[in-house]
Amino acid sequence: MLIVGDLSGIQEFIFALAEEEDGLARMLRARPFYVQALSEVLAWRVQRTLDKPRDTLLFCAAGKFAILVENAAPDTPARLRAMARHQTGKPARGRGAAVDRYDVL
Image 1: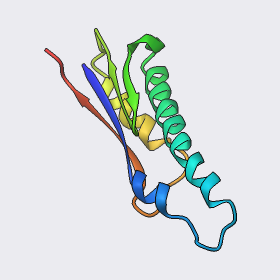
Image 2: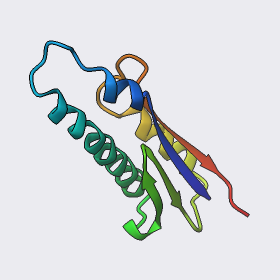
Image 3: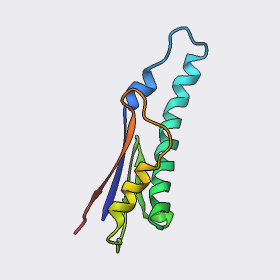
């Protein structure tokens, strides 16, 4: 099973800066780091929810991640839905995270 996660609203988040703020260049450099860190944390949470090791992470960049899960339990989709329901905070202005599951033959 291949589990794919995706963050939405990345460009809006990175480039939505208030013009009157000081340190715009610093903030512009920091936001891509935040997106990468958030992607890695979400991937880690999925792995932890499914009791899988870190080496199952195939790809994590640009707000996306892919996890290969061998011998997935039948309740994997339910566990992913439960994890999504318990995420703290609500997405703001179209930003959010989606985790999908794809069966790999």
